[in-house]
Amino acid sequence: MSVRAGIVVTGTEVLTGRVADRNGPWLADRLLELGVELGHITLCGDRPADIEAQLRFLADQDVDLIITSGGLGPTADDMTVEIVARFCGRELVLDDALEARIGEIVTTMMARFPGVDVEAVRAANRKQALVPRGAIILDPVGTAPGVVVPGTPTVVVLPGPPRELQPMWGAAVATEAVQTAIAGRTVFRQQTVRMFGLPESGLADTLRDAERSVDGFDRLEITTCLRRGELEIVTRFEPADAAAYSDLLTVLRDRHAREIFSEDGSLVDDQIAGLLTGRRIATAESCTGGLLSARLTERPGSSAYVAGGVTAYANSAKSELLGVDAALIEHHGAVSEPVAEAMARGALRRFGADTSVAVTGIAGPGGGTESKPVGTVCFSVAVASAGAGVEMTTRTTLLPGDRSDVRERSTTVAMHLLRRALSGDR
Image (tube, rainbow, N blue to C red):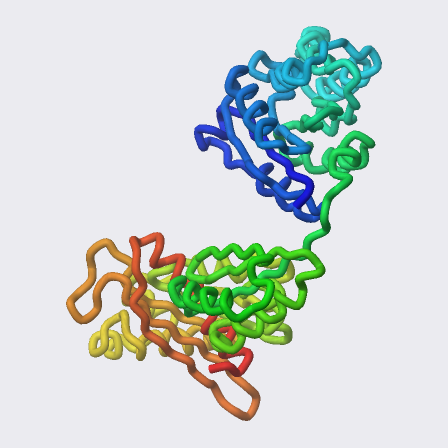
C-alpha cells in the first residue's frame, strides 16, 4: 500500500466520552474509498502539547496525509489551526477576505438573538480568520473554515461537528495539495459477508484452513467482528486479487452455507424490510421491552408493513391485550413455547396482521429457576398465507450476558427467525 494517512480527533468532550466520535469512522470510510490506507486514528483533549504530540507521532509513521477534526471554534480551547501552523513551520496570518466572510455569517446568525452584542461576537470569531501562511482555505459550512497545509505530510484541518466536516471533506480532497499527497494510492475493493449462528472459534478454524488452501490468501486483509450475535467478515483486496477472494468465499459457502445470510453486506434489517413487502407485521414482546418493535420501525417506509406491537410483562397484560389463556400461562409458565405461540397468534388478531413475532423470556437479574435460568428466551414467528393457514416457527434458546445483553441478543435472534420464516428457510 503506497499511500498512508492518519487522523487526529481532538476535543476533551470526545476524549472523556461525553460526545461519541463520529468523525474518525466516517473519515476512515472515505479514505478507503480513495484507496488510502489508514494507519492510525488518535484521540486527544484540547491541550496544545497533546495535539502536537499526535501530529508528530503520525509524521514519524511516514504518513502522507494527516487529517484533524475539531478545535476550530472561536473560544480559547479551540487551537488546532495554531498548533498545525507551528507543526508545519508556518506563520499564522490574518486573511482579510476570510474575516469578512466569517463576519457576514456571524451577523446573519446573531439576527436570531436580539440583545446580543454582534461586534463582540465578531471580534471573538476573528481568530477563525487566522490561517497558516500559504494554506488553502476551505470555505466554512458553519462559522469555522478548514485549511489544507501542503507539505510532507500534507495536513487537512477540518471542524468537529459532523454536519460541517462531511460537506467540507469533498472540497479538501479536490485541492491540488491533497491530490498530490495521495497520487500513488491504490483503489481497493471491500466485500462484507455476514453470518448468524456461528461462534467466532468456528470461523477462526475455517479461516485457518482457507489460509492453507486459498492461493493469494496472504494478500487479503480480513477483519472479523462479532456484533449483536452476528459475525461480520470484511475483506479488503486489490482488484488483481479478486480470484483469491472468490476462492475464500467458496470456502465460506462450503463450510457455512446455513449460517451465511448476506454476501453483499446487507443487514438482516434490510432483508426483512424487503421480505415484508406486501405484508403486515405485528410484535408481542415481554423481556425485550419493545426493542424488537423499535428495530422493525427504524427503516424508512416501515409504516407500510409494521401494524403495531404490544409490550406485555404482566401475565394479566398477556391475557387482556393478546388473548393468551390464563390457564395456559398457569400450566406452562409465562416463559414457554406454548405461551410464545399464543402471544404471536394474539398479535395477529389484535392488529389484523399476517405476520407476527413474539418474544418472552427471563432477562434477569434474578427470576430464573433451575429449569429456566436467566437468559432463557422463547420465540415464535407466525406467518399467515391465503389458503394455507398460519405456519408457526418456535424456538427456545439460552442467551448469555446481563439484562442488556440478553435483550439485545433476543432481538437479533427474533430477526433471524423472522427472516428464515419469510424466506422459507426453516
